[in-house]
Amino acid sequence: MINKRKTPPRGPAALIRMQGDVRDALAQALDSCQGLAHLPKQGSVFLKPNLVGLPSKFSVPPFGVVTTTALVEALVRLLKDHGVTRLFLGDGGLVNKEAGTSTQATMDILGYPELVRRYGLELVDLNQGPFEEVTLDGLRLKLAKPLLEADFVISLPVLKTHGQCKVSLALKNMKGGLHRQSKAACHDRGLNLDRNVALMAQALYPDLAVIDGRYALARGPMHFGTAQRADLLIAARDALDADLVGAAVIGQEPGQVAHLVEMARLLGRDLTLPRPLGGVAIEDVRLNLPWDFPWADEWTPAPFAKAGVKGVFMPKYDASLCTGCSFIFNPALVMLLTAGAGKDLDGVEFLTGKAAQPSGRARVSILAGKCIVKELGGDPRLGRVIKLPQCPPKLQDIQDALRQAGVAAELDSFRHFMAGLSKRYPAERGFDPADYQPGAQA
Image (cartoon, rainbow, N blue to C red; front, side, top):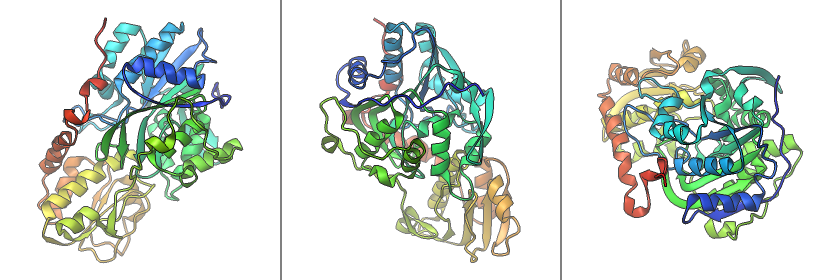
């Protein structure tokens, strides 16, 4: 395997307020953490932002979900100033044809073709490979060769929480460098996601981490969470150090974030929190963001209980739920909530992922996704079974399955929900769409 990825030497971490010109703030952060001290000017540099997915077929706010284009462009300019000539930028984002999500679609929405024109960088869809297959402590993964072969990799995540891993920062961000099947494999039936993320991240360990805290996202990693303007920037040569600071800023004790604990174990280190440079104390900017969506009981999402939705068995998502089925879980929840408000739906069960178990009380059991169909297809505890074996199922099929179960589901209710998300982010509270487009040229 051609793998230049090695854990970089540790150095200071930086935490600064992102005020004024983004490029100036980034330069201050990189100077503070000595982030470009080992930059190979003649080698290849790969930027790995978080491009988890922006749908092209309906509009959703990007705040806190994907890395701001303003920060990406500022970093590209600084790297060019340092003499870097071979510059690549890429990710392996969510692919869903029905919603129009793909790596290229997200890049187009964020104005990356203009960055190519201005700076000559090369865009890479890591979903397209090529890949190198490795086995890491029994876990077989296909890793994107462009990341393995780069001389210098920079992880550019967003400051956000994660409904399965508590935080999604510089280490978790590298999961975009896996083959689609390997991403799903990390969400195994044994609920070992945190361990698998650490193994993956060690193999794809970046040389520099820059955490974009222009906006911070609670209950991430997708659009269903809630963003706030934070104007923070975290940088460190060592990605684990960056994540320790990021987790503390979010409000998570690093020792309670399992993939950070596992990464420290793999590296033979402790979880001592570095004292960041930059004139900002963690305790002065701590955000205390919630990471989890609440359930009223084992079978009932909290919004169902609030809206009086009865007769639904929808167990809470778990770590076996991969990104593809995570994307269809929320539309199902919204359609059930909208159709069932104040009603008794008389025993409709919705199961997905790999580890969910039947209630044993359902009239109709919808099995959404190839994995849950394989796991439970003949289980005697199920009600009348409706199988959706696609990977992942189409949103239209979710609507049709709910209707077969006697629920007056409307896919448009989810579209209206998504369209309404922008109302959360008014300009007077500092939410600026221009952060997600290239800046004006001088």
